[in-house]
Image (cartoon, rainbow, N blue to C red; front, side, top):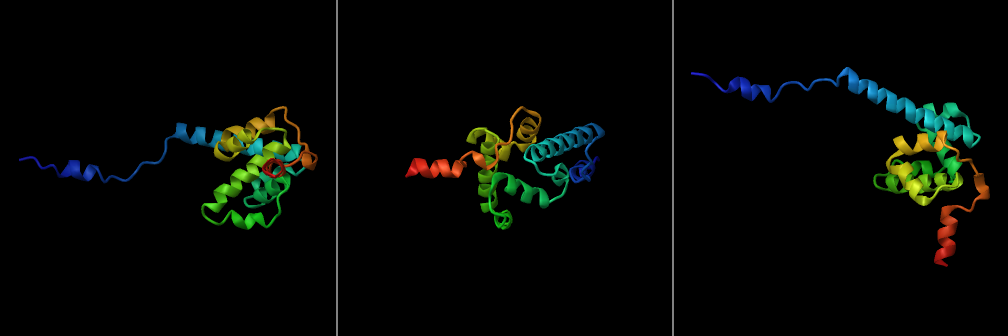
Length: 141
């Protein structure tokens, strides 16, 4: 008589670590994103190495977007952090002459859009460009 116990226990086997190929792809994507963020920071006149420092890179991104530094605290509030991320990314896109849709791409698909922004031909326009928030206020008024 054969028992189904080995099949039952096979379902509870320890999960296996990712393979070498997926680890190489993961590391390549991380390096590409860091390089893209580095280039964005340099284009905005900030130190590129700031892209490597957790939390500080968020503060630098807020500076590039022209947002107050106290917004950093909002990144720790669930659901609010997503809204703040979208607003900051839209403003970063506007400061580089890109559309709000591009900013939404930065927020949702940053691993694609930050390297595109960093290695592309976009130039940082700083505070000379009216912010997206200001444009929305004028349009609503």
